[in-house]
Length: 188
Image 1 (spheres, rainbow, N blue to C red):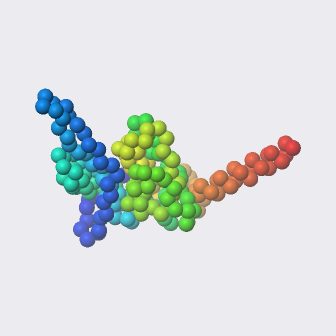
Image 2: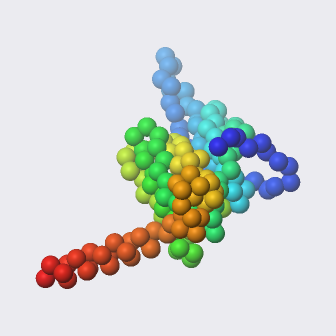
Image 3: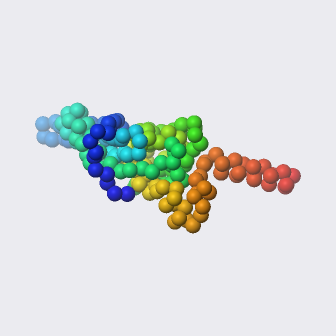
């Protein structure tokens, strides 16, 4: 998806995901600086992240927030969740995201939870595989969310009816469980 320009009037929220203290060793000792990873979103359908580095924590957060506002992307949602399963990758980090039923909530940890809340997603199930580094997890999550498209676009690309394109994790789990129960009873 293309980058979205910041529009005035919409209140943007920002949340700090991670702050790192970095030490540079020089002749006289150590010089400390800080890097901040910040996620910015409008709570509806737009989200972005930024990384800022500075000698003081507030300056690093401000720089990261400014960068995040410049890098916002629009996330298509469907009834408070994502339209279909998607996998985001960055380096050795993989984030699997599944749509969830209404009322299930955000089942995700750390950085993925922050991004989904800022994007306005209310029901989702996520799992992080590989590295748990906050920077990699944020980038992998954004990569997965950028792959999303509306139900109509997805259905036309797959060649199916839009009513059947919407996926729910519990529906597929229920079918798999029912099938495995039938198979185990048939063998017995």
